[in-house]
Length: 243
Image (cartoon, rainbow, N blue to C red; front, top):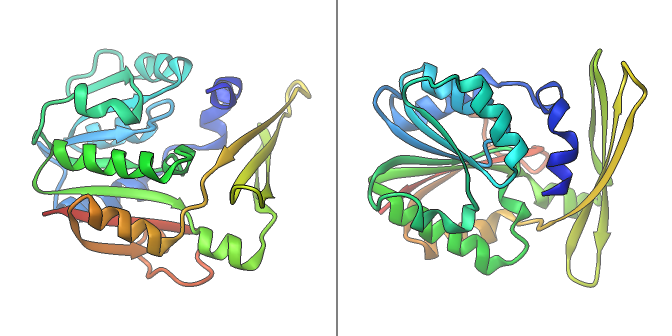
């Protein structure tokens, strides 16, 4: 995807590794040691690396070859860690059925699937790869909050290296959102602007799709600290178990 390719050199400065994601994942799986995990939309591999360091066997996939190249550079042939350029809608043909303990899809990756049927397909394929009792773990933006309040964007991410501005443009014709960004690299003054469509999936519809894919024990959280989801939570995090 051109959006991610254009920001790949600064991706780690925009989205650094999050130990809280690792702690949440570990809690949902009881432990990480010897667990087999598929990290969908892995970017430059930060989460995959941390999960592998905690003892999991991790395969990270991303559609962007530049992201995977950077992830492989970090991995340095580390045992229990693999990165592949793979479409999240083709995972059933890439991995063994009933072989995974968890499918993890953080970072608002899911809403790049613009058709509800594609989201359901991803859930169905994930269910086919998971062992009995395995979990799918998701993180998107809480679009109930965004849509109901008419929010025009997300907070700007800024540090000594970059400024990353994020705005929403609502599309009434198809109920999608144009996600418009402006990245400023402070050392050079370089600016990169992008616009990519997103599918703002509401909580209740997400639950319906997960149930259609035979997931149960569906839990919603308002943060990786395990806080309950509220109307004004910005993240929406989901844990669901394969039947």
